[in-house]
Length: 169
View 1: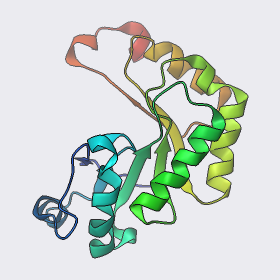
View 2 (view 1 turned 90 degrees about the horizontal axis):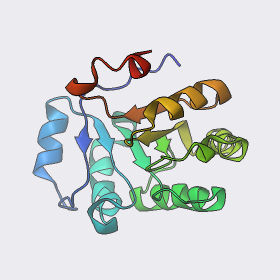
View 3 (view 1 turned 180 degrees about the horizontal axis):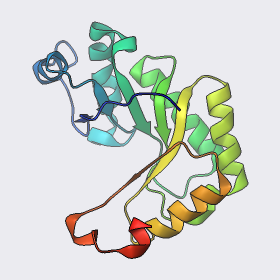
């Protein structure tokens, strides 16, 4: 894509001080400008408590990734969730929107890929993808490579998996 993505991020599964969060500002001063959040983080409060920080430092100065509802969501629910993310964060777009907790390959079927395309064309997100943390990472990554339309995949890769030939492939 040609886009440079920050390598350090704040995992935002916590509630922040909505007036002035010292931890967020200190990290930002030190170069941490990637916020990774989700609608479900901190019992649904993460976005709302991040919004003031984003305004304080300027939307153009942070990379924001958020995630929609947990799996078993249909296209309409993911689309509503993206709108909720934008509303709660008080921004006009995300840098990356993930379908959350993807473990079933059906979420890489045509209707979901087309949904991601619509989200990008509407300028609600620059990139679209999914995180996967279950045992079928290889299956999901292979399907994503075949169907296209996925810009990013977040997956668990631990030291214990270095010898996993299928995953490395």
